Image (cartoon, rainbow, N blue to C red):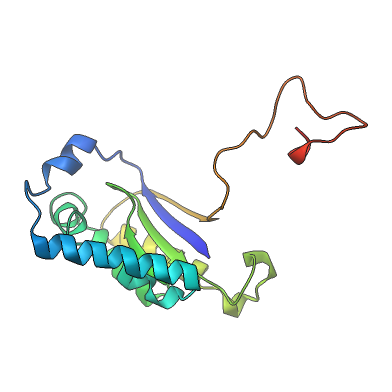
Length: 168
């Protein structure tokens, strides 16, 4: 799975992002979002990435932020999905839009070009940004199962006789 992110050149203010949200959430909205969490979890656990697009649907914050702050949001989501993304959504409170893509299997460097969709999705997201006059950068990366970890220490732990993980 690849993560394709369009990161606009502006900072989304938390106060503005919170300011457009409704004061109360209806039972229907809460039930909808809770159901989507179950769909997302099941999709990721089973590897059925085709259902992820349903798992990232939202009624509690994306519609309000898309309408009032990020007019490019839903057109970019639609463009990413039409180009082959499994799912696309507002990352956090925004302004970044994240799309998830997949290939046949394994690392993007071991896949044949026709198995990959990340480049088509990236191009579609960039075209949408350009249509809205939005400057930013596009980043393609992968998810990791490991959180933060040490990559370098001074002085190093490793020596010529003992090597620690990642040669730190």
